Length: 199
Image (cartoon, rainbow, N blue to C red; front, side, top):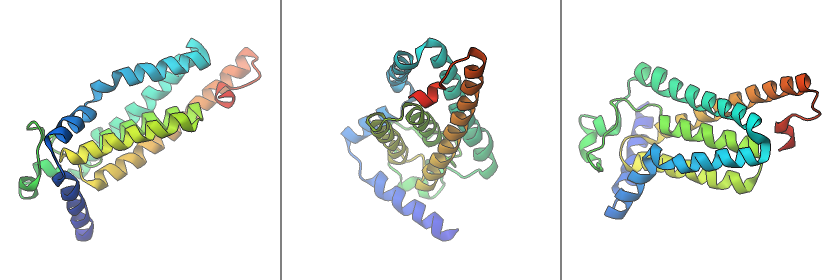
């Protein structure tokens, strides 16, 4: 456990210490969830163009399930259970952290809900869309979000890693749930193909 803590602190300090005024602005902006609303609208529009409104509305429920479960599992269950202080709240280590705009986040940080939520959304869209041209930029988006949380000093690398694993699991579970729902709709409507097979 001591080796893991040392690893986490070492790499966080390495990332967090490479700071500048322009990077402060950039990663503060990237870390803001509301900045990405246009992206969410764009992804919804792409789904609508390919699958139609009814299928898109069902898929949006799947996205809500993936992100909602991801956020609940990380923030609602694991953070209070493990009660691991964010680096920005650590009584000794926190003094070594570069803080941006006096932002320190909530008291506990393990695992990262930013990492889990963005991975759940990005991976689920990639599984539905099935195209590298969509997958690569979405995974880059996830990576930048994760890096921003370490740059801002509010998450350790291990917080991020476990958050990514949780988000991946929730994306997969939500995809399987959507597949089952669309299979049942296919039977009820007499359609030949599940839309997730057609994508």
